[in-house]
Length: 168
Image 1 (cartoon, one colour):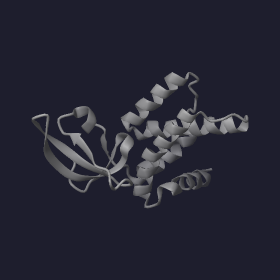
Image 2 (image 1 turned 180 degrees about the vertical axis):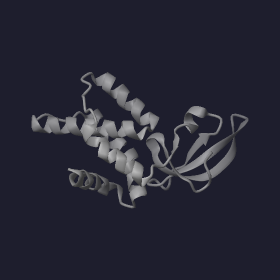
Image 3 (image 1 turned 90 degrees about the vertical axis):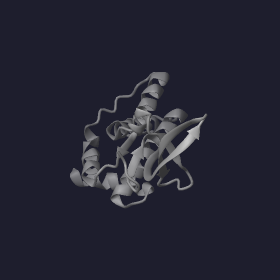
């Protein structure tokens, strides 16, 4: 399980610090909850019911610096195929964010970056819902990268770019 002070990720909420567990009575039933505090949203608190395996399964240990390096180096090889159907694409992106799977989230970011660039090159607008999914994916991924690398979230894109340029 997780211990007080552990830094973890929690699906779309991003990087959180475990502050322990509490027992609350909800609708007359006592339940134990893991208490999480998002690192970049200090006024927020997330209560994850310990008996809900699906929700507890969304809590993941934070990546290592080596894991991040490997993810970044895999970016050029990611298939950035676009899903044309808006509702299928939206459902696909929603599932990825919900899963918290960093490899899939990175793939999603890459797909969205490539598509956005293509849209700009052809004088077309980037769809609002795609922009929203991109921001959400960046939040989840870049906040974790920033914490592990000791940089600010808004420095992550530059870090990734420099890393990939060095590798060429």
